[in-house]
Structures are given as C-alpha cells and as structure tokens.
Image (tube, rainbow, N blue to C red; front, side):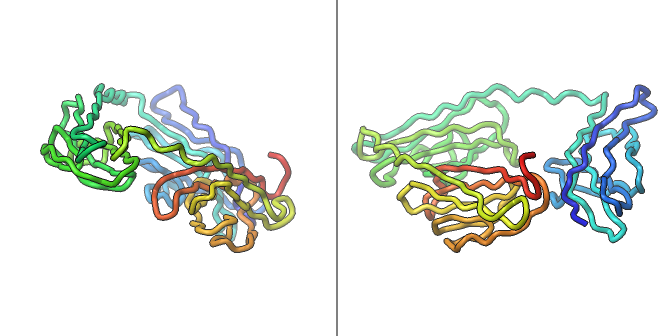
Length: 306
C-alpha cells in the first residue's frame, strides 16, 4: 500500500459551545484502510517528525471526531493506517483557537538606525546601532553574513560590544554588517537592519555576474523513477543545497548539480511517492553563506498534470 495521498480535512465548529469542535475529513480510498490517527500540537511547526506532535487518538473507519473545547490554541493533523499498520502522510494542518482567547498584543513600534563611525576610505571604521524599542533587548552582529559578536548594551557597536565604540580594519572591498535584535534572554526576534560599507574606496565594486539556473527533469515521473538536473551559468566556484518538498535533502559541490544524486555524479533517479513534489536548488559561493541564486521545479509523480 502506498500512503502518500494527503487527506483533505475541514474544521467544523458546532453552534453550541458545549458541543465543542469537530474535525471532519474525506475517507481514504485505499481498500485495506483500517482507520485514522489524530495528532495535536501546541507549537508550530506541527507535522509528522516535527517533534511537537502527540497522538490524540486512534479511531476506526469514521470520518469525524469531536475534540471538545481546548483552553489554548492547538494544531491538528490526521493520518490513515492500514491493516498492516502502514501509516499515511499527514493531512493539511488545522488550527483551533478558543473563542475567549485574547488577541496577541501588537509588537511595539521600533526603529533601528545604523551609522558608520571612523573612515572606511582612509582608516579604521565601525558601525553604531540604536533601536527605539524600550524593552530589554540584545543584538547579534554579523560581518559578511558570519557571526561576529553579541552586544547586550546600547548603543550597540561593531566591532566593539557592550556599549564601547571602537573601529577596526577588515580588508579592502565590500563589507556587510547586520544587527539582529532579540528580547533579552530569549530567541524572539524584534527587528534587524544591515548596512554595506566599502573599505578602502568610495566606489562600489561591480555587481556580481549575471547568472541563469536551468532545471530539467530526468527519468519519467509518470511511469518510473525520476530526478532533476541543475546547471548554472555562474562561473564562480559555487555549491548547491537541495530541498525535497521544502525539507533539506542534500548538498552538491560539483556541477552538473543533481537530485537525488550529488557531487557531480550522473543523475541517479528514484521514487518519492505519488503526487506533487517540489525540488529546489539554492546556490551559494563555495565556502560561504553568500546566496547567488535559487530555482525550483514541481514534478507530479505517478500522473500527468495535477
């Protein structure tokens, strides 16, 4: 049995609050379907393997289940299982929000200002940041997309930290300095800003080379195994990260770049389950986090156009 078809689900709220909320769904058409499992989460992401899901109940071949009236916001998805206990993919995600829940407070308005200190053309330089958010916040600082420092006191500075103002030298050419602000002691981001500085010159460097990314399907998604080959016209040393259905799948450092194979090998085709699949290639300069382009293609395995 091939459990790949998503189960369409609809959330129905009864008119009486005492009746609670009921999940309803279309029955699975597989002949040996034995029943359904209902999962719930209190956090996002919520889905099979997310780490936030918990099994709420296992039921037989019915197409509805009353979840009552949870006191907090919860998320639900459903799977089907057969007589051999094979389990399908999860359905689309549903959200239940209690009627009495108060709306979230709006995020305080804030402005982040960045200013260059020193002289990038003739000598050492740095960047100073201020933020109008009056809450207790801290900043992580990146230089050229790599973590550089953490600053817990304003005014926030690069390359110094903790309220000091110190300048430095970082090599002739373009440099990108970014401040990302969080509530102190948490991972809750409240804002970010970046500035580009040209050290040793007042003239910006030339733009990166124009590039084209081409994706082509190999094999036959309708009748057999398939894959995707990617080429790019960017002549720099680049590598690609590959995603299948928005999940990380592989990293390929040599062209032509392939899925599901990697490292410049001739494409190895495979099967990934009937239905729609999205394959995406994201290209970076080798050895860096500098993104130079991306492209994706949607393939319908086991049939023609969806």
